[in-house]
Length: 57
View 1 (cartoon, rainbow, N blue to C red):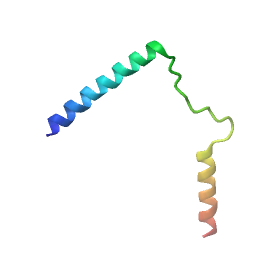
View 2 (cartoon, one colour):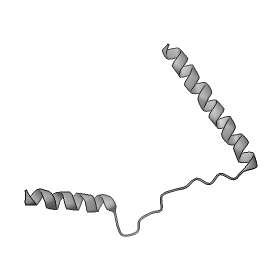
View 3 (cartoon, rainbow, N blue to C red):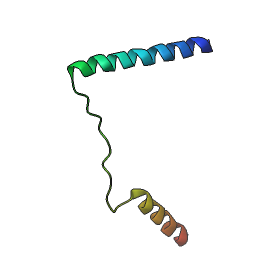
View 4 (tube, rainbow, N blue to C red):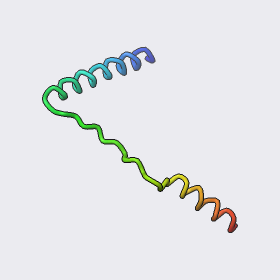
């Protein structure tokens, strides 16, 4: 059964790749990327707030 799952996954990935190549011939695919945050890092802000709240407890 595991062999069947692996075979379906491989064939499915080939099918998706073929569809993307076919789609790309007719249309332009633009991959959206997350813009870089300048000077404001949300992870640092969350860490800072967690430490501040931990100090209050």
